[in-house]
Every structure is written in C-alpha cells, then in structure tokens.
Amino acid sequence: MDIFAAFANKLPAQLLSPGSFFSIYALASGLLIGFAYLALRQKRRRGHVRLRPLARAFFRRGLLLHRSTRADLFYLFVNVYLTAVFIGWACLTVGPVADAVRNALTGALGPRPTSAAPDLAARALVTIVGYLAMEWGYWLDHYLKHRVPFLWETHKTHHTAERLTPLTAWRVHPLDSLLFANITALSFGAAMGATRYALGSAATFAFADVNILTAIFFYTFVNLQHSEVSLPLRGLAGRLLMSPAHHQIHHSIDPAHYNSNLGNSLAVFDWLFGTLVVPPRESPRLKFGVVEPGVDPHSITELLVSPFGAVARALTPKAAEGILTIQAVTPPMNSAAPKSDEISA
Ligand SMILES: [Zn+2]
Ligand SMILES: [Zn+2]
Picture 1 (cartoon, helix red, strand yellow):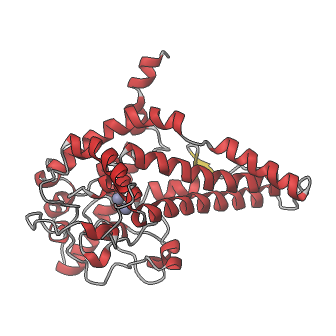
Picture 2 (picture 1 turned 45 degrees about the vertical axis):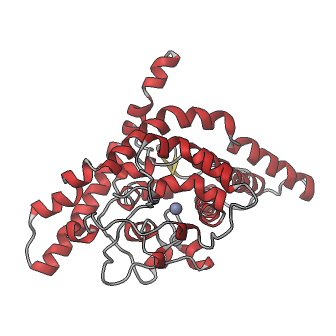
Picture 3 (picture 1 turned 90 degrees about the horizontal axis):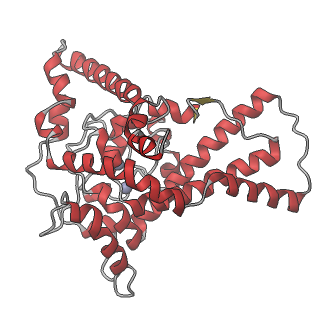
C-alpha cells in the first residue's frame, strides 16, 4: 500500500478497527447501553417506554448540527490526519522506555529471578498492571493540565465544547495530545519494563490488540462519557469507576465541578486525591463549555492557532497572576443551551 493510500485509510481504520474506541462497533455498543438505560429509567418513572424521546437523546438537530459539534468534527480530521503524524516524531514510545526500565532494574537488582507464577496468572497480572499504568498516566496528565496554567491552555480546547457527543473526544489540541502521549508512554512503559523484569513477560489478555480491561471500557462507557445522557454510578461503584455522568460533571461550567473527575475509566485516583465528585441522586442540569468575552470558541483560529499563543503567554512570569483555580478564569456561559437532562429523559 502506498503512503497516500495509507494516509487516506486512516479514518476508515478508526471506524472499522474493533480495537478503536471510535469504531462503529464501540459506538453501537455504547448507543445500545444508553438506550437500554434510558428505556429502563422511563419505564420506572412513567410506567411505559416511548421511543421518540429516547432517539432524541442521541439524534436531535440541536445537538448534531450545533456549531460545537461541527467544530468537534473538524477536530476529528485534524487529529486523525495531522496530529497522529506530528505525535509520531515528537514523543517517547513505550518500547524504549520499557527497555530502559528493565535494564535499570537488572543493573540495580541483578538478573531477573525466575517467575514462579504460572503463565495465565502472570498474564492476568500484567493485564491489570498495564491497565492501571495507563489509567494513572491519564489521571496524572489530566490533573497537571487542570492545575498548571500553561498546561491548561493546551487542554482548554477540549473544554470549549458546549455540546457533548462522541465526536467531542476528538476535540483535543495537538499540544494536549503531545503531552498526553509522552506522559502515558512514560507511565505505561515503566510498568511494562517492570513486569518484563519481574515476570519475564509483557503479554496481556487483549481484544483486537487492546488491553481487555481498556477494551471493556471502549465497549461500555467511553462514548457515553461524551454524550448528554446522564448515566451515573454511585456508592462504591461511583468511587471506583468513571461513569458517563462523572465525565459530564468534569465538563460542567458550575464552579463546584471545576477540576473534578479527572480519571479515564477509573474514579479511584480521583477518590484517593480528593478530586472526585460522585453524581448526585438527582441528575444535575449541567451546562458545558468555556466562554470568554469576545472569543468564538468554535472558530478554526480559536481551536487551532490561539492555544499556541496562550501557552506562550502563560509561560511568561506575570502570566499566572490572578489565576487561582484554572477553570475559574472563565465566566459563566450564556444560558441558551438546552439542559442536558431535560432532553435525555
Ligand atoms: Zn479536562
Ligand atoms: Zn471530555
């Protein structure tokens, strides 16, 4: 396959690869779970199920044709066709990090001991360690981006989405992706180096080359996290797992929700470090976005170009003055947007 065909094939590969979070299979699975949840909720509240409101929760004009959603679509192409190339030469990769960690451990502790763990147990352990390492890398990267002003400027683009659809996952500035790729490569690579040293293997249980635990997340919650269907987990489950409602709270413009729920599929790191907001019993009527006076958050300039200047300005000595809470620099959004929970019911 020539280089142009490989390039053209990038988007179909995302949509058709079963290991992609954005595959038609993962999207359909998330949709089914969302439909089933809303149908059960409707049945419990009203005693019957009406299909029209269920369909409108996912497929209504005001959501799909909103400028925010169209900007997300623009970013889908930016990320699939440009950022992937950019990241390819600008970031650490897992293999060399894992090798360096394994060699360092061998140098410090001597040749690896022979593992007594049977193959299946070792594989299960590596699967869990790899999953936790990716989750930790995600949380740490996300925490830093919500706490450090110049890093927030790389991440703010994601939060300027005023409507949430699965496309919003693509609304990520290349600088944000670059930092994410490096931090997760360090975290995951270090874990894989350690397991190779300790167990002689980095083999995991996988589905379509994706860690099986991550794949389960892809086929359940990941695409519902960027939707306006408030599907909450509470109690112990809400402290362990990041339900769609958790991530919607993360996008909320309510100051009480700023810098909360930073995890990917796990809520445990937020629970441990005090950044967890478990969805309340009454689903909150959330509004999403970051609105700054005189700024159009969905213009190509604001989406793609301005973050470079904002990062540079935030790195100047005077920049952080007056910024106490990163998301607090943004004033309230106008209230024209429909309430998410009104529609999703
Ligand atoms: Zn965030
Ligand atoms: Zn998000």
